[in-house]
Length: 312
Image 1: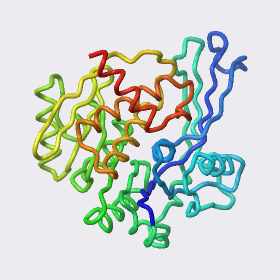
Image 2: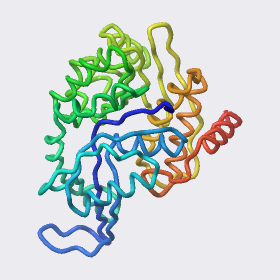
Image 3: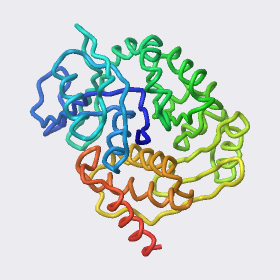
């Protein structure tokens, strides 16, 4: 059987509303609506599948129109949804945001209560599928006991990658960080994970060494326009990139970056090339009006990587 990875985590429907004018609270506001399929783990798998990788999704969805959308669009993108659990009489995970006419968020609501239905029994029912994977990627939206089960049962043999997603979610995995193989935080999330303030590159090195001392094997710190910082137990390096051009959407770059880290790990690609390709995947996402660039491919990101190297 071909190598495959498993994603265990959130799969959402994202609803975004943008007001045409200044938002009037407690009133109806004319605007524009957009509905898309999301969820950090699901998004990572979609990018991975579009790069040519084999990805299987373990998550829970409701038997509603949003669940149908998650399943159909994920399958169309190349993700194996065979083992997704459908929960009767329950709403699918949904995120809704309202933006004003300048693009600033006014309010957002997130209903991820269905994640409580992603249980240890569900994992155990899929033990052979998980156990046969080359790598597991997950996000901190999982119930605590489920995350503990994944790390206790599988991390000794199968590398588990995590995207902390936010400072709040980083706090959920802070005490478990040493059981992961690879983490991809930003600088604020590194502060939460390490317990120290990061105000300089020297601080960043020290903070990441704290994570290494806890047992983490590799950390990739996304630093926005400053590039990426990488550390393992043998070395560290700063990967600096030229400014991204053609940016039309600032969401989705992290998911594309993470999926490429995974692809490179599974395919034994060296760390320097991994950083170049992952950064290029982030650029590809920034150039798309959607969270996921549906045209992303290994060929595309190699071309972007070569272009960025020429600019340096």
